[in-house]
Image 1 (cartoon, rainbow, N blue to C red):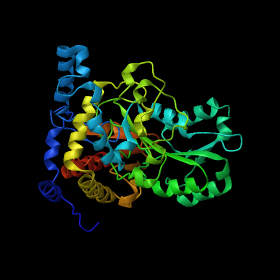
Image 2 (image 1 turned 90 degrees about the horizontal axis):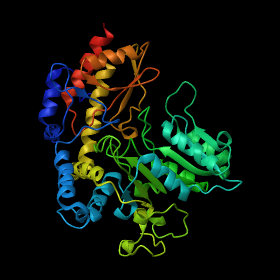
Image 3 (image 1 turned 90 degrees about the vertical axis):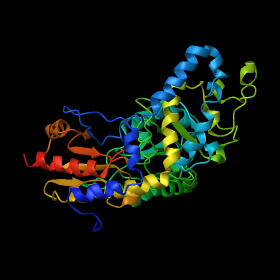
Image 4 (image 1 turned 180 degrees about the vertical axis):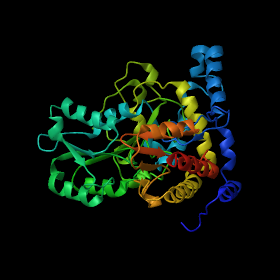
Length: 423
């Protein structure tokens, strides 16, 4: 921590030396009551809108207005192949090969479609393991999969829990769960970065452990994509999915993406729920052919994609292409470390950071447990021009997104929190 300093001068100096500083001006910030930019720390819920997004969306609207159905084949970016140029960019962000990635549907829908292929329960091996504090949608999804296959969702769900009086799970407990019940577990489905604690799991370690016990392994990367080095191909995971509206800044409820490891790319025996967009592109419009799946993740597509949503994703991916994940992660670690350094000055009696302090075990989010606080503290924080995220019972999640957050944002956030705590 010694390379951080107190005082505004340090924050100003860091911003002056920040190679990504210019990107801040490429995003729209919400304003406070005085008309100043808010301190926006909720890129982990909804990323800010890139200024270039409007032009990309307008271009699609123009083509629709001027070309109508011919927009599928004509115009600068024909809709039929609109997604194809984006796959490579998305694959780089999550550390995958282009054949392993496709942009489609929404996150939980993708998890269901992928589980149709990779959750293959038998009478003896039917259980699903998730982290105890998984994002609720993941828990609901796997419970419904258990019921769908005729199993009891209480008996079939195994929870990887943190030790008593601790927030973070550990791998020894996971190993013990698999040693005792591994032969009954069909699927492990874990959030790559836990939404509540911000803990970034070792995906490769979990995958190898799961495969050793004969389980399929998948990840919900909603809080990981665009935030941490997921290295999905190298992890060996069978599948993964993520939304694009958090760190990938593609707009509320925008499309999701998914990963299927290349070892499954040509496996026609995998059960899957199919639709015409997963069919061979060359013969897709002949309409009367038997289903002939596309290789790789693309073969899981069902419907033609919503181009207006893709346009916003395309705009954001262009920024990620320019910046690159390595540069982003380097700044992220330093910026989040600075937030941690300043928060620790507030003292253990006031706050506790429940996110791991090892920068390799977290992304940019810090989850701050405020002692003896309730939501009224968060309301005051919001009134002070800081947009953060409250999670019951008393945690504030702050995510300094390296693309658009500055060191001064972090400095002023902690100054305002100090004022509220001393009130």
